[in-house]
Length: 170
Image (cartoon, rainbow, N blue to C red):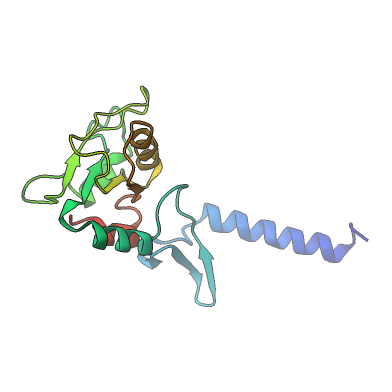
């Protein structure tokens, strides 16, 4: 029977576990490794990436094939009044400069306008877009592809440490 005590108890236990896991400090940053976070020594939960963020393997292959032609497009906005969430990732990974991240350019994706400056490169240039965690990186990727760029991946950003390790120093 659908409403027997055993089914009710299983659902209540599962609901309690989910509520505890999402509202507690059980997901400590010190336990973070890649896409997985430990809850207990014997339990591991998969933490999903934002839609469209490439896998570390895809990024590794892309970077390897692109070589010196690779362009990394950082779409984060340093203006905390516009994108307050970017402040955390900027503290971990600075905006591109000639000294740091020489294959990267800073072209802000304007979420409100749905636009960004286009990079001054050939349309077939291998490009990785990123923001802090992948949301605007995907919007930037889509925007570039809508404007004729043909070789674009979304790398997520510094929050996706396993992905960031593949291209973050470029």
